[in-house]
Image (cartoon, rainbow, N blue to C red; front, side, top):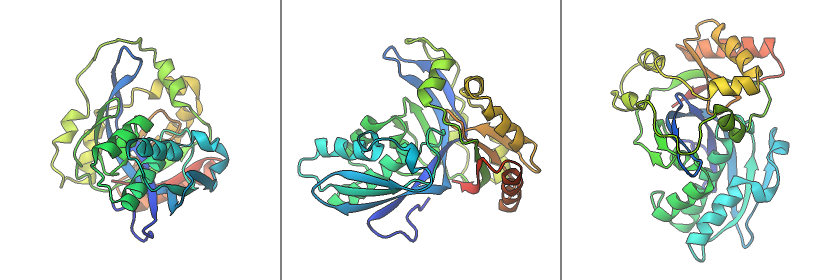
Length: 300
């Protein structure tokens, strides 16, 4: 996906990451969970601008800015600092983040922001996106950051460090809905109840999707996704029942072909046969639940 169309050279979009599937396959002795996930990216996004300078910092605006927390905790700053630690003399500067995506929502917003910062720093410093130092900084910043570096549909595995080749997924018409309740990732993983050192369990769900031909239709992909799941959906609903309400709203909307939670929630997605159907569903859900965040989009 070309997230930079129409953007100036010193700015990047940070598209929402959607887990079309999410299987938790075990837990390492150090506590990290092992996963297998088919990840796609939406047209809705945060936006990040960069101004070279002597001081690293970030300012945040936008509808979700109050929920982003302190500057030192922002993943944009942490990613830039991780890269600077690996590249002496790195040209850094100030970032301006327009926060349009919900926070703690299962959309990888902070990770997408961090990846956008790394792309901007790479461009400003003449660094290739596959430079091992850039990839290492992404991994240090967060488990979802590596897959967000080049936002295209692909399989991710391990603790997030294993990133497959682009899948050639056709644009999937979708609706994203968040009930405006935060659902911290650590809380949901704790509710899953896997003990450290628990070995790999079932075979990876997403593996069979990775080899599918890229020129298949939207209907083909939705049918294939029906056989997968999100293992965090049940514990997320136990913690925050509003997730079940969102899923019910999506599943009962006309023409919805599949509804599932993304990541650790609370955002859920519905897949539809056409952009027009997705737009109608988003309008209907927004009218019924005006307090929810609801957008029609394309997943790629």
